[in-house]
Each structure stands twice: as C-alpha cells, then as structure tokens.
Amino acid sequence: MTVIVRPRAAMDLDACAKLLIEVHGSDGYPVEGVADPVSWLTPATLAGAWVGELEGAVAGHALVSTPNATDDAARLWEEREPRAQMLVFGRLFVGTAGRNHGVGERLVRTAMAYAAERNQRLVLDVMDKDKAAIRLYERLGWEHIGTATHHFGAGNRTEAQCYVAPC
Image (tube, rainbow, N blue to C red; front, side, top):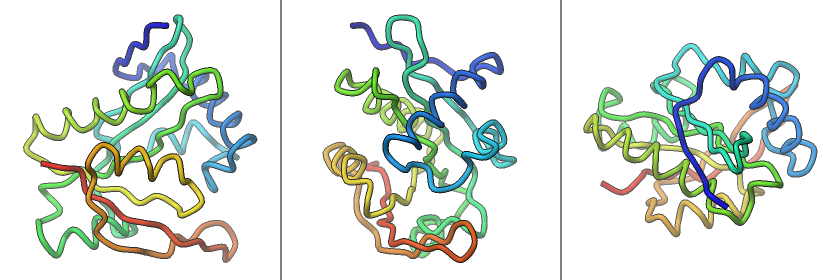
C-alpha cells in the first residue's frame, strides 16, 4: 500500500477528528481534546499540519506549533537554544487501518524536514504509556532531554518523556 503525506487541508478536519476519536477509543490517546477534536487539531500556535493517506483515506495526522508557556519539552530545551529556534511536534496519531504501513514514521520525518528547512529544532513530550511512540522517536534518533509531569483534565497528571529531534 502506498502512503502519501501531504499538508492538511481544511476539508481534512472532519476525517482527522473521526480518526482522533477512533484512536482515543483504542489507545487512550490523546488524554485531552476528544470533546472538541477540531479545536484541538487547530491550536492558535499552529505552524504546519499534515495528514498521511493510505489508499486515498486519511490514516494519520501530525502537526507542529510554536512553543508556549505550557510546553514542557520547549522549557527543557530552552536551556540550550532560544524558543525562536524551536517548534513543538505533536498531535501525532495513526488509526488502526494505517498501522504497520509506515504512516507514523512518514509523518514524523515530514515534520522533521519542515523544521530543518527553517533551521529550527523539533521538541516533544510523550506520555510514558505511549510506548510505541517512544520507540518510534528513539529509532529516528530523537534525544531524550528530560522528564515532565503532564497535567490534563480535572486534576489528572501523568509522567511524560521529553525529546528533541536530531539536527
């Protein structure tokens, strides 16, 4: 099957929202944003977004945004580089039909190329429970830069690992 990664268009948002709800149901990711997925997929800090298609259907999603005060990985990496030189990678999810076809890896590599073209580094945080995502980032050479506590919902929290993309 051929995977196509392309910039996300406005007409993709409904399909992305449905896919997000599917992934949340199967994996518990994300821990927030499911009540209003379109808003969660269109943050005010959005810099770029992509979808991965498999056989003409949206199978995955990823985006990058400018850092804000609540981005733990940006806060940790800021000790080495100014925020102006980084973007935050996130909102990566792949539906069950797109798994084991390289959709997630292609989306990550696309975002990495986007940042590199702009001379920026990508940072991210990933919850400890998301082992497959951690394995993907480490396989692609992302450097672990620390641990943070991710706060969500009404007083919920979980540990998260913070990474920076390779140069």
